[in-house]
Every structure is written in C-alpha cells, then in structure tokens.
Amino acid sequence: MNRLREHIEAITPLTDEEFDYVKDFFILKNVRKNQFLVHEGDEVKYEFLTLDGIYKVFYIDQNGKEHILQFAKKNWWMTDYIGFFKQNNATMFVECLQDGAVVCLTLEGREKLSSELHKMEHFFRVKLMNGYIALQQRIILLLSSTPQQRYEEFVRLYPDLISEIPKKYVAEYLGVSRETLSRLYSNTNK
Image (cartoon, rainbow, N blue to C red):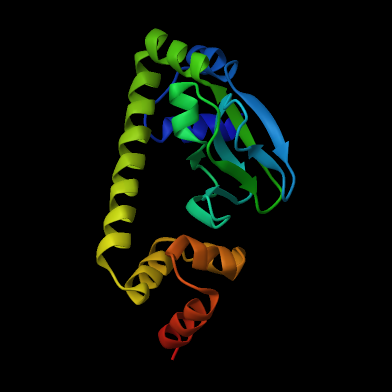
C-alpha cells in the first residue's frame, strides 16, 4: 500500500489519517500471466491501478480480430471504462501479459472517496484528464500519421515496452501487420 500512497501523493499529499481511510477502499490482487481481470460480457466491478506487470486492454470485433486500445504498466490505471462508469457488462478484455499486482477500486468506492475527501476528487480528476488527453493524442496519431510515425512515437513514449511485450501486440496496437512492424523496426535501427 506504500506504492499506492506514493502514486496518490505524486498529485496530492495525504495525512496519515487520510491515507488510512483511503487505503481501505482498495483491494490488493496478485495477477498471473494470461489471467483476465475483465472479460467481455462480465460485470465490470473494478478499476485497476497497476503496481507490477504489464497488461493489455482490448476488444474483439465481429470478425474475430483483436484491437488493442491500451497497454498498462506500473502506475497506470485501466479497465473497461464504458462498462465501469455506465455499470454495464464489459465489451472489452483486460489481460495480464506478465505476472504482476494491481489494486482494485469499485465505482462506489471511487465516488465515496471523491465526495468525502476533496483531495481524492482532485486526484481522480487529474488522472481522468491525463487519460483523456492521452486518448485524444492516440486517436489523432492513428488518424493522421504513417505507420512509421506511429511506431516512432510508440518507441519514444514507451521505450521499455517495445522489448517487454510480444511484437504481435505492438503491431495490433499500431494497427499494422507483424511484417510491417518488422520493416518499421529495421528502418528505425539502420
């Protein structure tokens, strides 16, 4: 729980009393490689903060093709946000790619923390704003750039992920074939 506190206090400081109250809303969960935290069709009970490991958030279209929306690593938040905030069943999956650990927070817990502790409302607002900005930047990049530009931006933003996750997932995230990704890698490393 010390890592949770450090994560929150990167945005807003908490007293020991405040953190003792906050931490009771979170559940620590160890996760194994290939384990699903969210599965399409299931109730979305939690939002997750990653403590360790790497995860992918994805959906599968009508043709059975997988589309990766997000990778998550240490100190990143993830879930099927449509299902979580609208309290609908999941339309996406969250899968663990490396053994790790997360802390889980319910929507009810998030709302209660936000209403009872202004510092936490501020924390969640900042995290939501940063996530929204990142999402818009990703959409703009997908709509207006070449595969080479998308690859270079991915490497710039996430240099550690490129070597830690299977290349097929990087290709899916970038919206290119595995063969195209190999060419992009070769062009960049000449």
